[in-house]
Image (cartoon, rainbow, N blue to C red; front, side):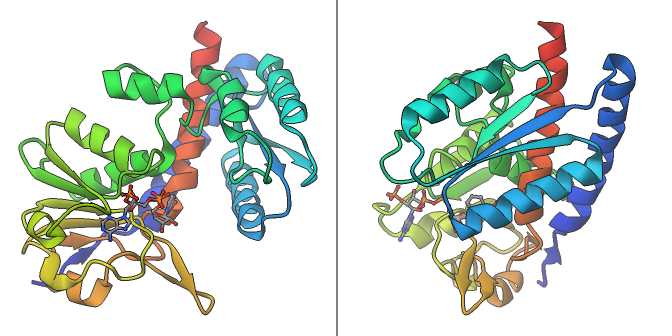
Length: 284
Ligand code: NDP
């Protein structure tokens, strides 16, 4: 079997068109643009690239981007104060604090200060808790993008065995909860899992978020599976996934490439969350 490549760029472009339409509608209804504020503290080069991409995506979709650049020396108190100011700003619908924060800053305190209704990254304990309870919430962006990619294949999720490799709070755990809420039977694997391949080989849907270059190989994949590769591993200026694409594509029915799979979906789901937060704010 040679897998169909799931095109994240194409799906992201389609969803960004929806954001554009929603953003225009909001502006017509409320006389201002939807606003997304981003706080970037410190000089992390990867964060700078990511923030630049967010700004470009906002421009493309008609969402107003507001950036707040702070030095490495910023304190927890200063960051919390800025977050509280933006929480109270009616022109700010979505607010995100770019991670990682400079050493010495209390990340938990800063993220915890973001108003849950503006927490478009979906990292706040209130949103994470509501996701767990199955309540409406702003859900984490990369996991939401993973779900859109799986759904784009047209396969039924209910009743399937979904295996998630990785259990981080930002990817593995929320993806597992989302799959569960779609009635998959979910197994979560991690660094202490024994005989990992026994689990991956029984996965109808396999989501890999480990952070190790080409960690999952074709022999670990069930024929006909849907494989979603979240990994982003840079080596010699090249980007590699957590799945060895060539051998995996010989087994799977559908597979995401890296780059061009999950990556383009993350910022797109951030924009979707920002639209959701804007309308939610108006209902309150
Ligand atoms: P973390 O480092 O937070 O988590 C990695 C997970 O992998 C942990 O749960 C860890 O287990 C598990 N793991 C490590 N080694 C093994 C192993 N040998 N066998 C099984 N499981 C193992 O990473 P993230 O979740 O933040 O990110 C994962 C990958 O996804 C990275 O490459 C990251 O760059 C990428 N990513 C991509 C995004 C995108 O937009 N495309 C967004 C976010 C992340 P344990 O808990 O036991 O330590």
